[in-house]
Length: 433
Ligand code: COA
Image 1 (spheres, helix red, strand yellow):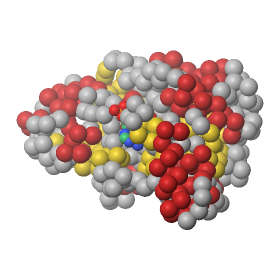
Image 2: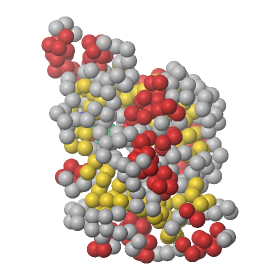
Image 3: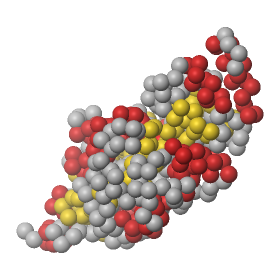
Image 4: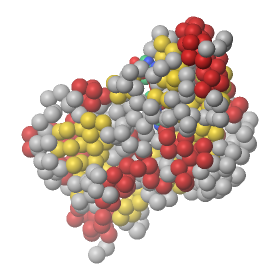
């Protein structure tokens, strides 16, 4: 049958689509900016018809109403990365958190750990062959759709068409809801003195011809600001945001020296404004692949001079890095941090950078601490730790003894917090600082 007829037969309203979800189903919602907003709203409105629907979601950037108090009977949230709208549910016991590496999530769906009953996704309009692109959210969303018993898709005219391994044919979708809402956007962060100083130090570690992974937020944006004079940079990153567009347009990022996928920006999801979404639309330099490829350390390591830049909550004097909890309180997740730190560490001439403001909570606490808070998760272990950068400088930990690491970390701690760390150093190593 002609795909256009198949498409028409599958068209339903959001209300009708969510009536196909049954009690006790496991529902996977598309990641981050790819959240299918109308279907999620309709599902929440239809709550009286469900009991114990498990919602598996990673970065939840929509309203997160399924995780609000009063929803327990209808929905149980299983978070793979806690965020602003879901952290209360997870930390109060109404929801749960499943620790996992981002690159392993598709395997959890495929290999019987978290079998998917329903995938709710958002895709571009079909091309002339009937293929819709996963656009801003390929990551675990494509693998979830491929392993789900039922696929419900928003087809959004605003979803860009990203190229790569990023397509689903209309015949593989069960129900289609046409929408035209704007995509979720993430505005560039405001950059202060601290972020700029960190950006400068990170940029000093990035050689011409490097391939970069940059996380979310102010620090990656600040790093990009200081790369204007570099040459032949490339991108292999789980995500990119607006800052990358200007560096591509100015020719700094040309991907020419990449040893894997030369000429291409390799990504698995996108988080920015319309400027980014328009830039990636049908752009042949963008190669979007599912996260089990992009984030696999064995793939990442094939990029020579791979530099990963991520952030954390706390680092202790041994170089143990907590990036996801404050004590026992879960505030985010592992995400792709360890995937990229391991990949960069294994790459020829690679560097794995953790870049952080030296303090948190409006300057009240140091992020560099003698011991992690009780219950804190060690996201990146001390053997994987390589560089730590604050606004006070660079600590290179790889290959260093515990004593050398402690010295290097104290040197980049905020001066107001060095005293207790020095005392701890002298006690621990029976040595003068
Ligand atoms: N003690 C107390 N509070 C702390 C803290 C600490 N050591 N460190 C952070 N916080 C607080 C902050 O003050 C802030 O509070 P607020 O929301 O009330 O302002 C909050 O926790 C978030 O911290 P902040 O460091 O400002 O957040 P961020 O947006 O820069 O993100 C991470 C930092 C570590 C949470 C984030 O990078 C992350 O989730 N990393 C893990 C996943 C990852 O690296 N993925 C790969 C890249 S996409």
